[in-house]
Length: 276
Image 1 (cartoon, helix red, strand yellow):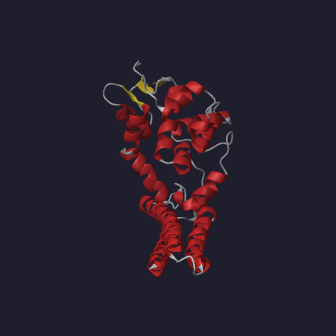
Image 2 (cartoon, rainbow, N blue to C red; image 1 turned 90 degrees about the vertical axis):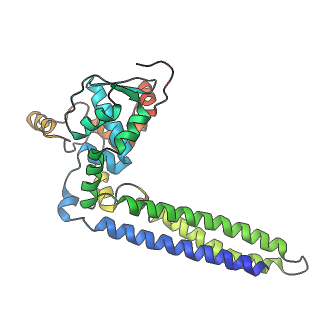
């Protein structure tokens, strides 16, 4: 009877590990499809940096903080965003104002969810995917699902192995039964380890080429402006705007780069009864 458990364990291990290999190969092919030398050499703007580092929600956080520092959006520590200036300077700002809603006020989590689904954010993602800098959504989802299945298969091997060992009569060699289950357990464990070390980038937003560009971005280092006006101002002055390092750090590292506890609380979005 324990042989049936062994067949189940081997089947789960082989199928899930095989699916993970196929998913990773498909993700690598999709990510490399649009990558060119020009794309690898160009600079990322703030929005692109935020998307590649943290996805649509990071783009929303960057837009909120950027508008908040310019007093065009009020970010309350209670987790509410309030529009002060209803005129956006680019498509992402205009879509953010729309996501806040006609009342001009909304909880930050609701804004983040609505803005992530906005056409402007999807267009940004499509441009990065076409350039080979971002992993396509289906490929990223398939790899993540495949990794979870291998993890589940690893647990199944442990459970079936334990059940099989308990089923073996004490007078027989239980060690031999356990040894048979050690092989599929080793297969799934090694597969997860390799996935963690080698293919973990494919579970993120940036492709290999995108991560190469992200590696060149550091707080305080100039990045391309997200719209022509700031770019012209920076070029005229010959320097980066004062808050550029702050915004770059937010784009790359997310909310953990924020030193202001009230601003972190606002982006975490824990609304209370009081409204602003």
